[in-house]
Image (cartoon, rainbow, N blue to C red; front, side, top):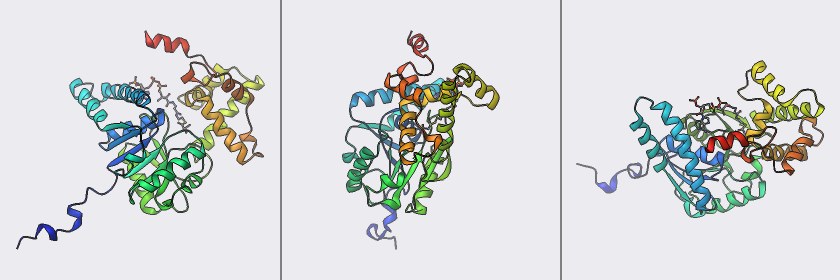
Length: 314
Ligand code: 3HC
């Protein structure tokens, strides 16, 4: 006898298990990149920021990046490239209210301002409305995942997913687990990272995880070297590119990451561990940030980008 529809096991009616819908909060460079690679991997994405104007800029950036990728990936078939870009962008909806849109997400990735209070406030609100199975992740580069997770009652479904800039190009994701992160959550975060084309590495919840703990002091040492007058900025960068094989020199990289971001990271670590000389404040960095010279995004940092940016506009 055919099984009655009502006797079918529940799994026949439930949606495909795992991560199918991702809510990305923060439409800046990191959030946009995370939204982009998630959509390109075929998952539905809801991208959240404070206004549709910001989100419009995020979508423009995503489309530009996808066009670059498509021009290489589909070099022989530009029509297919256009479809890839269109289909990927179609996977992303943009909204301004995270709470209203949290219910249907399997994974929520936060990439908002790098401060503890707003992150905790956001997750605390989302915890009350998100589905029970929803995993929460923060893309913080320097704050404690454990402290952020304290704002929720789902520490077992909480972890760090730390991407690198530019997200579409950088292959790594640091998957950060806190003491309470369940194996299932950790495995789902690692699987998600692989699905979006990245290589996951497991990290403990320590300041800077792996990469930034090594990279930020290295960049700050380059600034201290410049302050001492040991070498010129161009020579420090050339030395590390040609002598150590880095794609960018430390000062260009600091400009690329954002000098305000570097300052926020180093100041936060200094507050937590004032005796660690590697975390001590760096005068030149502070001065540049005070002057609004934030690196590539503001057109000026250790190097001047205005001419290149103007040439690009023409
Ligand atoms: N989307 C799509 N394609 C992109 C892209 C993007 N956002 N950015 C660059 N590309 C492509 C370019 O189109 C170009 O393609 P082509 O070779 O076919 O012309 C290719 O990448 C190389 O780009 P460029 O020629 O413009 O410049 P580079 O050769 O210098 O590469 C780079 C750019 C990939 C950014 C490389 O310089 C690099 O790897 N730099 C180091 C970046 C890094 O260390 N990031 C980590 C920062 S730390 C961090 O993010 C952590 C945070 O918490 C602070």
